[in-house]
Length: 186
Image (cartoon, rainbow, N blue to C red; front, side, top):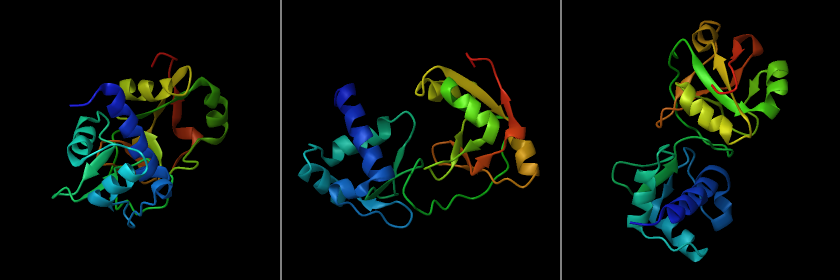
């Protein structure tokens, strides 16, 4: 339907306005991060983005990481997780698997091993169910490092875990005692 480069450009723009800066195009999100699809399309087009519903639907459905989702009648859209703005996700706490993984860059390891993994400007720390996904995340931050997280032990000590709609594991903080460093290639 559209070129890969155009898909990526639109996806990045959607991430910007649905996860971080809706005000860039005068968009309003409700308390759970939802916005009206027609309003989004109108404001994107007014800001120089040439997009219609069919292209938006394609971008949402083609996104391998399922970053965005429609409501049941496709009149509302939101980012599934990764927000830096305040929203109410409505996630339910669930018991995680024994081990989860966190991908990061080599440059962050010293800090992580001193203080743990902090959510910083996001709502949660993002964790993966497999090493491959964590490695891909780490590659976005330079030389990748995969950390093994003793998630079940964390849960047993009272830490809460959530699973987003696109299968990203979320928690508020990972203390250093639950982190094991793996070799650099995952």
